[in-house]
Image 1 (cartoon, rainbow, N blue to C red):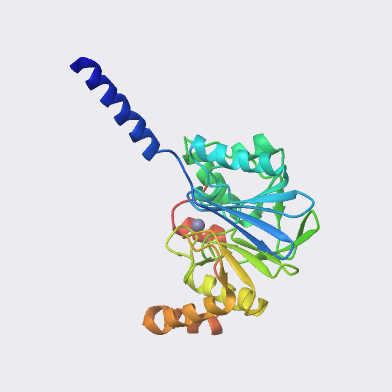
Image 2: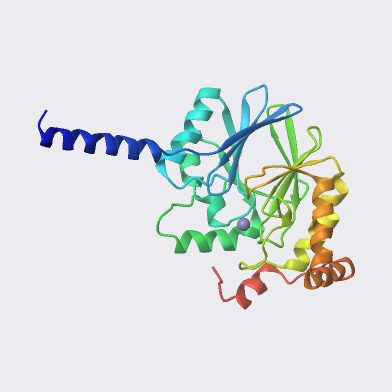
Length: 273
Ligand SMILES: [Zn+2]
């Protein structure tokens, strides 16, 4: 073999090794909570596929951006033969909605969100030239029920991270899908448009804490996909005592209620859709 052939062969080996090392992959985890299977895909956020023994299911926050991410989700749902009934956005931040169009096209399911998030959603849809954002089929409200298979989820409206932030409480399986209302070990960020720290703390305190210490929480962010409520409360109190500003906001939230409506806050932020 002459030098040129050896050189070409080495080049080929290098390219194959490079492609192998950079092969698209995504962290996944599957959790079974009583009757519900929850497959977690770590795309830009935790995208959840929740389904039960009937093989009916929902997708929560499709955060896929790359084609290979779309393929991973599609392959899993096809392999498991899951009939997707709903595609749910817990709130309209771009990393939670970027896969909406792909899911609507491929699963023929209904797209769901809370109506208070519409101005933000439309704003993203207008300004984002990369993704297409289909219209919602169903606008859900507080205490509405979502049913699929043998499961019933109750909607809990909990803005503060963003307008339209909605959680889903599954009483039978003792879990809550919290989106970005809670992070693993912290509360959601409030420095984006329509964020409101006091409102967020109040909603966590009034609507999530009373659900019980042993309820499993499924936040969208961070590798740690679930957290028991009791641990979450402890972490938030630790955060509270470690940060005087947070502590002040927390105490205020216990005594002051009400936040400006979303439209006013959008105007304040200069980001009216
Ligand atoms: Zn968010």
